[in-house]
Structure formats: structure tokens, C-alpha cells
Length: 296
Image (cartoon, rainbow, N blue to C red; front, side):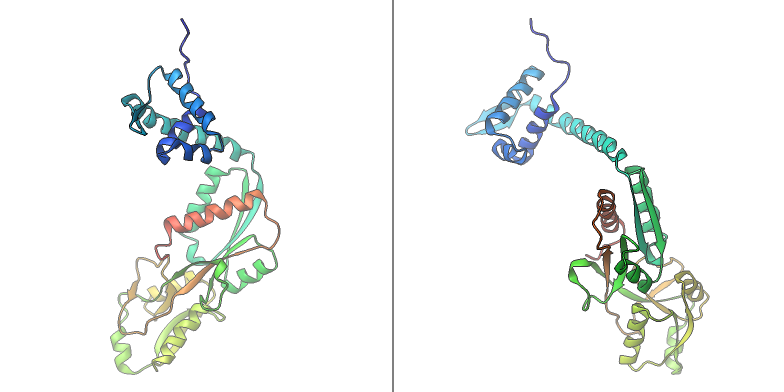
């Protein structure tokens, strides 16, 4: 009596799962770069290993038997664990150093999540992360001083190939800030903005000028944390993209002119990329889409 195998051939199992998912084993053969005869042989081998029929004919089509449905459920779990284990082992062998430049908008939310995922997925990749002003990051990217830089740009003027998405901009103030009183008094609107040059600063001033609303710079500074502190203190209002706005502040939806969207772009070094840099780029874009960008 022939002894039944105590394990399932994972290659044959993958062929089975892919064929069922695609609804066609001819398509599975193409997807897995195998001949149709090789796929048939693998399915026969899988049935022999399981000791049961996994598929039955229904006219010209094949359908799962009860045992086939059970194997499909377990098979997906087995393949997932196999792929996860293989990926984890392979990732251990990837070394390198990657530098990323970010706006302060991303420092409190995106950066911790991104660094955590990198540490778990690629423990041997060293990350150099820096937060800086837009122009500084652009200059360092152009000079190949950093591998990647997340920057704000005018979507009408930028290279569309590097555009990730367009993000709304908002007028923002403390809930205690009396906007109506300021507008009714005719006095200049107190603005709290980052020092020039700043694309968001320019958008705020242009929007007010177009509506002939008087304004003055009440506070100007070089750090976003300083801007938030001044706005929280009720010294005026600011403009910022719709990312990581402090919960203590309020978005102003009425009484002020509408602001244009701002482009978020990923600038890359022109130097040849290592495997580590390609992987971190994919992780960075994935983290942005998953956690921070409901706009695209």
C-alpha cells in the first residue's frame, strides 16, 4: 500500500488557487509561465496527495467539489504564510541607506508610521529623514543630496509625472478668532504665515488681493510648529494644506475667498537607484495613499 504524502506541494497548490481565482486554468498556465499540460499534471498530483477529487466537470466547465472548496480556503492561507516567510527572509538580506526629505506637515503623522513600517519590513535599511522648508528640499534633491523629497508645487506649473495628488488648502484659525469682527471693521486681516519664499503664503496673499480684502503679516516664521502656536494663541489666521491640521484649530469654510489646490510631488535623485531605494519609494507612496491622501 502506497503511503499518502504528509505535505502538499506548494507549486501545485498555487496552480490550483490561481486557476480557481482566474476561473480558467489556461489563464493560470499563462500567468504562471507553464504549459497547459504541466498545469494538468500539477492538478492531478495535488489530487493524489490529498487523496480526493478536487474538481468535477459540469458540462464544459470545471467546478470545485466540497473537498476542493475546503482546500481552496486552506490553500490561500498556506500560500500567504509561505510568501510572507520568504519575503521576510529575503528582506533580511537587503542593506542600504536611504535619505528622505519631508515637509513639517508630514513629520507627526506620516514619518512615525513610515519609519515603523521600514523597521519591520527592512531592518537592515538605514533611513536618514529630515524635515525642511520646500525650497531647501528642492535644492537638495536637484543636487542629489537626498534620495527622495516630498514637496509642494503649483500643479499648473509642475511636471505632471512627479505629481502624487492635489491637496485642498484651507483658511485656519483658533475657534476663538472673531473673523466677522475683523472683516466688518475694515482693518487689515492679521495673517500668520511662513517666511517667504513660500508657495502657500503666496496663494493666501493672492486670494485676498483678488477680493480686495486688506491684510497684514501679524506673525512670520520659519517653522510650522511656530505658526500653529501663534494661530492657537488667536493672533490671526493662516493657510495650510489639508494635512495634519491640529485638532485645536478650526477650518474657515465661509467669508473668505476660495483657495486653489496645491500639488504634492515626489522629487527623486537622478543617480542610479539601489534596490533599497526602490523599495523605500514603494513603501513611502503606499503609506501616503493608505493613511494621508483621500484626495486622489
